[in-house]
Image 1 (cartoon, rainbow, N blue to C red):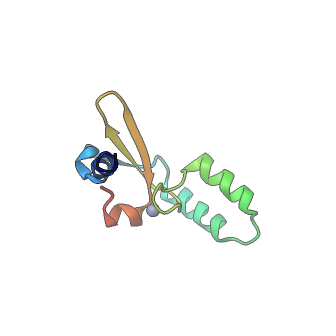
Image 2: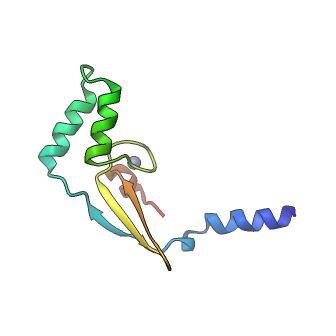
Amino acid sequence: MHKFNYDINEKKLTPEAKPKPTIEPMDITSESLQRLDKIMSSSKTSPDKKDKLIKAITGYCCTCGSIATKIATYKMNDATLIEKYCDACLARGIS
Ligand SMILES: [Zn+2]
């Protein structure tokens, strides 16, 4: 039983479990991103409003939770997995 669980965990940790993603920039201008960034750092905007804005415009980076700027598409056998990342996490490598 214990051995069985270990095998499953091992599989999840293997990078080969995910195919290489196609990275595409978010469909948003850098002006809009900068404006969004400004709103995010403003203390006048409520956290609730910030949250709604991010979700409506770019979404969050799935690794660190900051504003996502790139979309990674993984073509799996029977599905397409889409994940969002920020520049910093992409630069670090996401596999
Ligand atoms: Zn990130």
